[in-house]
Image (cartoon, rainbow, N blue to C red):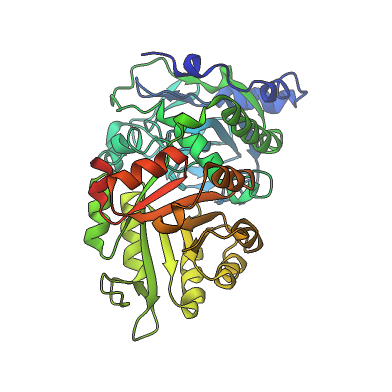
Length: 447
């Protein structure tokens, strides 16, 4: 297989230099080295972990680098200490920014009594199975192809085995820059940046072999540093990658998000079947005052938001909801904040006041200012509402020039066009470099 890094040129290396040669506590470093995990990767996996931040925990309390509470008491006895490994990859196959975790629990005599691993935002006890093996005191674990959740066998990945091949191929890069709440003020996520990430990761798309016969990646042979040092470094690394991609990828190569308008759960399934990135739907207020999907008739009589969001989450689809009634904003924002969907969801409206209210209640979500006209002040209006995108109707979009789109991008604002109804319109706007194209019929992208 050709080396994609060689195709694109050298990755940004300056940020790595600041991590080497730093003084560390020799005792803690030896302990972290002694039990650093050995990770088996799929034979076709394009990415390896780059650096690991470690913490030694000796009392119950919050994890330094993961949203969880660590308890030293286990079913196999009380641990004397826990080594937390925060393992940094630059890339998940779907996004820039990847931090996975392993926790090694050590007994009173320094023996390993428990090993846990991160699993799509959750924590799994991967030492409960007799399949866990060790190499000279290092637990040997498998990383899910492209996604890097940890398990002990292919069986551990079977729940996602039907989704992973599409996520590692068609949906490579679809989530852009992953925005962790810890770094939201230090990493600037923009629509143009998301497109750069998607374009870059498309080059690494692969179908997993589900064979893990490569030599394990031994974390003690990589950079191993205290977690606070890694935590400080991560935003610098991510921002350097975004700058690098901007300087090395030609605009003619940019990908765009493929979006379809949906009026029912069947439409959502159809969009997924045609490998679209995002579904767009209106949300109104039903007879009982609850937020529901706007149907094809224009009435708020579709499925409720719980069902819609569950369907999108299960299908790993991005979702762009358009608010039709200001009274549902408190409902919508409470619902969104129940589960962090920051990297999957956008909220749109023609009303800048409504968008401002959404941002006030759910500041991490991306918002879209809709417009049926090309207005000179539209970028200013979007910035005042803290909107991340502007969506123009197809009619208004025909009045846009390449200069307009570049001006929006310089302001960190993405451009969405649609809904469209013809292949000719789709071709026209794709060449103009818009960030997302919305169609009425999901099959239009196949024509």
